[in-house]
Amino acid sequence: MKRLDYYWYTRTPWLVVLTPLSLVYRVIVSLRRAGYKIGLLRSTRVPVPVIVVGNITVGGTGKTPLVAWLAEYLRGKGYKPGIISRGYGGTASNWPQQVRPDSDPGAVGDEAVLLAAKTGCPMSVAPDRVAAAKALLEHNDCDVLLGDDGLQHYALQRDIEIAVVDGVRRFGSGFMIPAGPLREPVSRLQAVDLVVVNGLGDDREHPMSLKPGDAHNLLDPDKVRSLADFRAQAVHAVAGIGNPERFFRSLQQAGLQLEKHTFPDHYPFQPEDIRFGDDRPVIMTEKDAVKCRHFATANDWYVPVVARMSKDFRHCLDTLLDTRLTHRG
Image 1: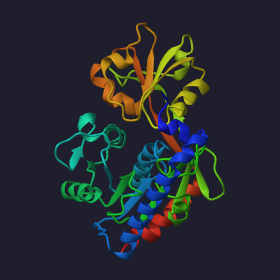
Image 2: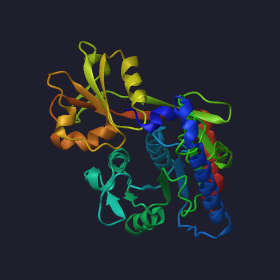
Image 3: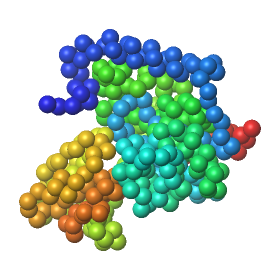
């Protein structure tokens, strides 16, 4: 049986039976946001500016590559960025947790380990983003914080909001959870500072493209092969991310023949999950690789992706950095 999120994007008629629950969810979301706006719920301002990157739908839209791009861009502007996140999927018994490239993804979350390794930025995770921010600032010299997937975490005040939209799947059925993928109404996008679309969007949205790099070996990341090297035979393509088809399409566009293996987002891989009884290469996402590295073989590879942003986006971001961060009161 297919998961519920499959039906969100196929507009299956039977989802209408869930619309009463979606309406209840929408009311709760609206009341919660209003509570923060009028001060009934506490919102904390930390000593340094906060840039939040998130989305209004459940599942992957490309937030993590954008956070990595922002970290590098801010560093190039002379800032000292740090990153905070929930640490989704992490099972640590105590929070917050400081994250390093060699941290256990089972404890702190796979995306957190990926970001720490990819950016080299100090990072802290906790379900309470305020606690994560305070812990990061206590132990590191950061002058701006990037909040990964923090759009709905209103307890932490933010100076800039960036929302990411999937250019292919968009908003699915258009309903809130559970009849659709929306965490907040589409109208929420009118309140954010920048809307980034992973793909093609409308005039208000800034396009982002994700360029796949060469394949890196899990056992020896310095061992690199171009994707074209894998065209001679079919490969096993493994993805445990929010939108696995995006990863599969990128490999197919590079000319690879795939046997697809789809797993749930943040799936806790075990050795048997990526062994298929033959000697064909196994190619996976960078996020999945952080969970498979300790039991990988020489035949396992991952493909990193790099976000590419438009000149117009960089101009708009520079304006926000100057008006919101440089002159922060």
